[in-house]
Image (cartoon, rainbow, N blue to C red; front, side, top):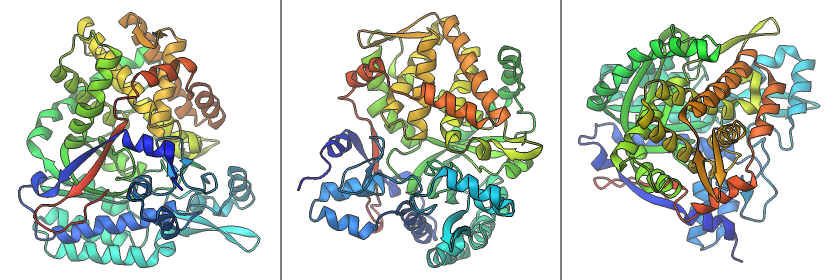
Length: 524
């Protein structure tokens, strides 16, 4: 039987891009094989986290000799189409949002009822690094290193082996500490060391970080790994932006009616090339940038790093972003080079904006975090905040002519990302933004085309949207977050027509990793 018809069609709309590790890094370090293996081990743990209601090998057996179907399974890390709101493309039940993080058919009500009845369990249950399992008539929270002991122990050992031959002292210390932290799921020390890395040409992000995959509670972090080659020259050029942020925040505060708490943040901007990725870092649509760590304690003490992945960014712009912009705005005054720079700059400010605004908040008399308070709605709202605040920063720096080019890029990005599906944090966040701007008459849809109204009206609506999101985050108001997301995270008939107008343009890219110098596994 030919399974996955619609999903095959979606998959065919994803442009394949080859990243040759040897070309991306001129000199491979002596521990490179161990670093590659560590990425693959993190990938294996991620598979286990995703496979709560199915067995990976059984799913692959269903594909038989159908290579394209196998690629589809690997691309989505399971039988659910991530580019089509997680619809199954094999004969399996609908996707259970519990995944491997919670018992099957576990509900939000089950979670809340249990922690209310057992307040002593709340910290463990809300930890990003535990899974919840049934125990007798109740439940228990088990740390990752205990639930995946064999894989975590091997990963720790491989990182220690990589550290033995690591020539950079700072990076060596990080690898050793990370190897140790994986065995306890306390990443505080290694996160602080990673933020302080300055001179290592090869960089590694590895462990459980983002909570996008936890669609039930928005609490549990998924394993990922990113192996990077740092671009020191490009990083130096963009560092001047760091010095502009405090002034930009102060200028926006009276307009937004909010205090933008950036003074104590230490943002380290940099650029790198992605060499190899695994787990949440490889799944479906690859990220063009990231902002880590997520631990509020580390951010408050030493700050965070925002890394732009230049080769991923360039590939997405050339194959997706620029074609979408030309389709939506054929009369644009922007050249391809100007449009790319706008795309790059918005990405930079987006990552910075994750460090602006509330992180730890007072809720019901106790200290908490925005993430814990907003639960499953946190990711989409946080991505929307970063997008809108980045656009606010950029518009405050741009003249009237370039404002129109900026807005074209911004709106084109919304249409591009909504095609990821509303179930994804980025797809949902961009639907929120576009619908809000439509309701505020900042833009309009006429004859399947997006019409941009006056820049001043757009700026006013953007400020209003940003203030609304920040207000929800500051209060940690779950009910207001639910109402806001359910109101604006939709695809209307008009938006669907616009999406249809760009149907011939690739939805995104998928990366095939190769190494012309050594036999590294080539990924689908």
